[in-house]
Image 1: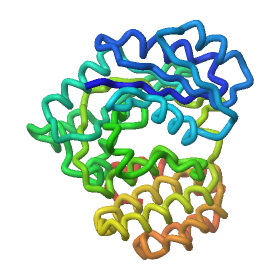
Image 2 (image 1 turned 90 degrees about the vertical axis):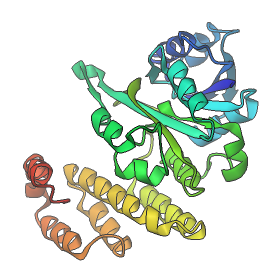
Image 3 (image 1 turned 180 degrees about the vertical axis):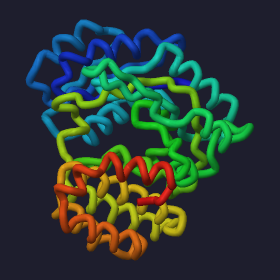
Length: 317
């Protein structure tokens, strides 16, 4: 197995050295580390070039995360592609443990892993996904039969833990450059629609740094973009005859974004999603949301209490 690491970056001068140090310090070194600079205006280029020749630097005009990842895939020599954003990092044994799992399950063509979410400004770090639950669901296996199953069990990994066989991109195409947000999720669902088993390591192996300013994947957070993304995935799922598998995942994503918009008292966005995807959400849920949006400030203030009640009683609000 040969692994190329693809690292898109945009104005990450304060973080890119940490990212590259983590990629260069792997106990199983990758074949290549390629950094695609998406038109940074800070000192990112100067910092990355300090890592040459271990790291290959490619600069492009600002075109977004999808175009940057595509440039990295196109320039790669490895038969597997590992993704890592320019503000995140791997633990030292990340590649070694992921490759070991892939070699033990040669039918797999893609893999993810558990990870840490780091709220570094608060000196707080948490395990993102429930390791014990993942092990119980997986039992004696290293993989889920489908990504749909992994997603519904909340053991779906994250971009910085994804390693994908290069030939998979011949099957599903490259990243969608028209997708300004959710471009990585768009790729995962396109692969999922091909019903490929999804390898998963329950051990946290990477660190996702939260709340990074100017992140290449965090510049857009608009409800219309999410709606376009979800419409597209529903269309693909129908074409690939897996709509029944995808619909529960779509409902979970909708509930998540409605919940997020509540914290911002963004009633317009909530109502927009409720009406646009009325056929996916249960009637009882829609009625409750419409009721709660009558007094958005009060609902927003009560969100922590509502979340706690929802978690304790599993009301699926």
